[in-house]
Length: 304
Image (cartoon, rainbow, N blue to C red; front, side, top):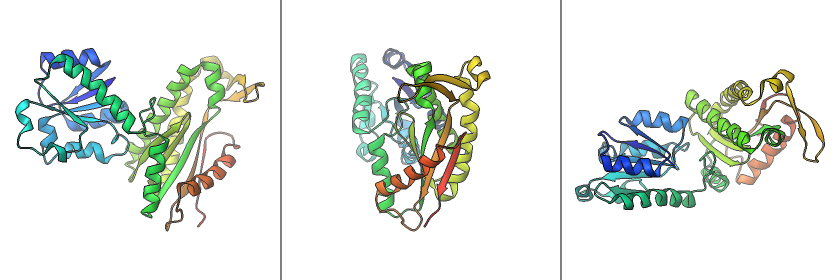
């Protein structure tokens, strides 16, 4: 379990000991903006925020965490002193739970994993990338379609991922998927994309939602970053040859080029789509075409 602790003051010996014993890594940050940057690059399992930041400016820091769908699903826990429970409507704050500095080490050690596991159950989150999963994706898209929001929805997957997975092993394949998730979040952050949402359907399939005018530059940025980064996941000999030898889905041995990325996007202009399945169907038709092309590609369906 990875934790980010946002606190203006140093943690006491007891809390430090508890966090170190329960978490594989703990980042103690004194400035909320630093926490947001860290969460973009390396999403934690839990965010712990002390009272000062929880109530400051009517919970502005908490709202900042919540407002961004890239990491708004992460559990936020308030770190309180016993006297903090009085005089503040904690139930009005957008937090999952709280822990008290006066609680015993055993109590805190037991509650932190419980809070994380409960959040995972409550939210459909991909266990590898910690991004919203398929159910969350469908609900989010359908809600935006019901509101007739003019958005772009992009389905992204990797070309030749399965042969890579078979050739290099599942551990290396997981590293590629994590890198892909970070590439997309980096592109969204760098381009300051509005209405952004990123979900991980599973395997090498991702979904991106953004403002319609942002989808073209976002696709181009993702492809540029991916084509540059993916080379780091191949051995020198395979890079030199420009391919690997692995088995296809029918079990036949053949050569496969280096992985590329395909993005099929549709536009909900004028409330074109009424149901998630309609948008998914159009995107599937586009993706079938662009996956037959060499290299990384994207296509945006601009049909009315």
